[in-house]
Length: 230
Ligand code: DX5
Ligand code: ZN
Image 1 (tube, helix red, strand yellow):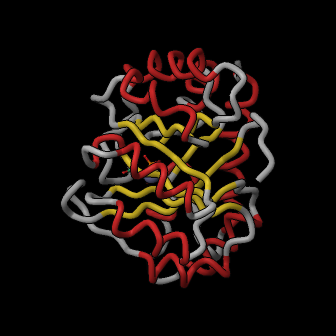
Image 2 (image 1 turned 180 degrees about the vertical axis):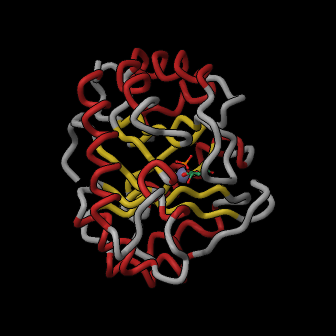
C-alpha cells in the first residue's frame, strides 16, 4: 500500500446484498472502488450486528484492492489477530472502545497491518493527538456509527481541518465515514480528507445486474471530491 493523497473511494459493503458479497465486491471493484470498507458491529459498542472474522476471511479472496476493516466492537484487543489472519489490510479501532487505545494500536501494528483510529462525532480531534505516530489512517465519523444511510453531520468539518493541520506531511490518511454523497464529498476533501467511505452513496440504485450504476455513483463522488481537494 504505497502512500499518496489522491482521492480514494471506499464503498461500504454494509449497503451491499448480504447474500451476495462475492459478486458485489467484484462489481464495485470493476466499477472503480479503490478500497473495500467492511463494517464490523457487535450490538454492544454500536446498536447493530453485522459479521465477524469468519465472514471477512470468506470475502477476502474476492477483494483485489484494499480490505479496510472498521471495527465497531468493544473490547477490541481479543479479536485483532483474528481479523489480521482473516486478511484485513487496514484494521481500524475506535478511540472510544476502551481505556487502552494505545495498546490496541500497538497490537494492530504488531500484526504487520495498517492501523486505523476512528473517532465518533462527539469525540474531539485532541483525543488522537498523542496517538498519531501509531496510526496510518484517521477515520472521522460523520454519522454516529451503527447504520448506513444516515445524514452527514456538518459540525465534523472543523475536526477534519484540525486533523489536516495536526498531520502535516506525515503519511496518515484522513478517511471520512458516514453520509458521503457527491454533495458532501467536496466539503470533506476541501477540509483535508483523502479516503471517502460511501455505503448508500455507492450502492443506491444499482445491483450486480446493474453494476454501471455503482460506477456512475463512484465516478460522481470522485469527481466532486477531486475538484475540491485541498
Ligand atoms: C456506519 C458505518 C459506515 C456506513 C456508511 O456505522 O461505519 O461505514 O456503512 O454508510 P453511508 O455511506 O450510507 O452513510
Ligand atoms: Zn464504517
